[in-house]
Length: 239
Image (cartoon, rainbow, N blue to C red; front, side, top):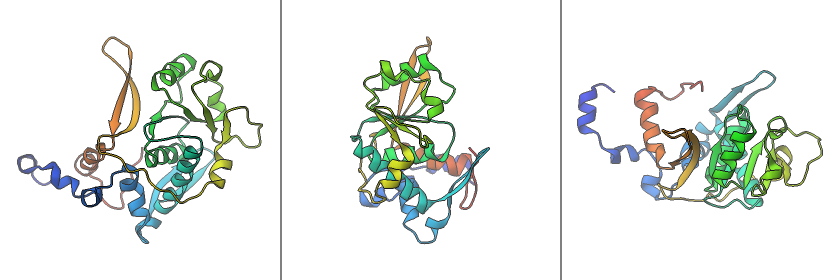
């Protein structure tokens, strides 16, 4: 931004919206705008979308690969009965599957709810009950904190990194299910104000409060990236 005052005086949300394909097509889904439209380009599709560095794992995922992986998870969620408006809880440490699940949920119109990995039983139960979630994505290490016996409304638990351990009732292996799922997906097109994700915070008197963000958030997030973070093509954002 060259001149802040001038930018404020001439600002028009409509001009910002022209950066998105839905401004021309009328078809809205944040996952398409963030991932798929780049994945479909032969050059941009091969650029790095997510570069993960962990203690025992490193993985570089291109936009084309992210489209493929998120489509597979989206198809798994549909297989388990997830529909537009359903809530899916993601209770994982920081890992590629965390982001793949978020994108996959958006693609079927589901509302994803990211949960902080340090949460314990009481806090987890409060959020699960309040959200009305039917699907939980987690890891075997974190799953032991979730009081599933008291949460019959959770219909399915997708476990990341379960290996060859024996699965219990309602449990599914992320790796096995995603490897069998199709990478082709018919996106669920939504309205701009349809919910995208649910996060939990606390109200003024300390009560738990769920806050919904819509697909329309993408417009403000683009401006934040451009004006606040000053991101340009080829930059890397460490989050």
